[in-house]
Length: 109
Image (cartoon, rainbow, N blue to C red):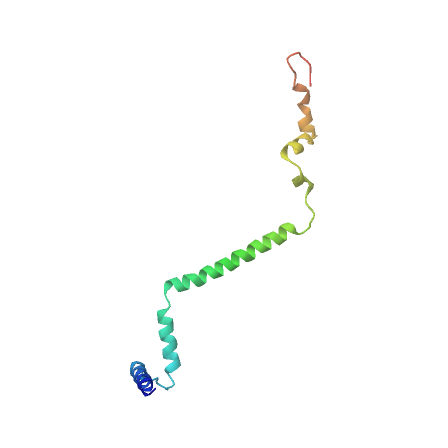
């Protein structure tokens, strides 16, 4: 057991030698944060920007989905197809040339 205590004491002594003493001055924390900020790289900043952009995109998608699902009055013009709109068009300008269509037998349509 004494041998294990000696090995433990030797290990602790090596640990104390390898770790520098912490300076308990007033500038310790500011210097610590300066070192942390210095290690932050461009990729860390880009990752932060990507998170912001992804959050904004998700918010916009959610807003568009809510807008699309919300009930509101739709203009009847947008509820039919282009051909249906042309078929329903009975303006005088469109009817003025309706009798000009003649088939091969000479019958007006």
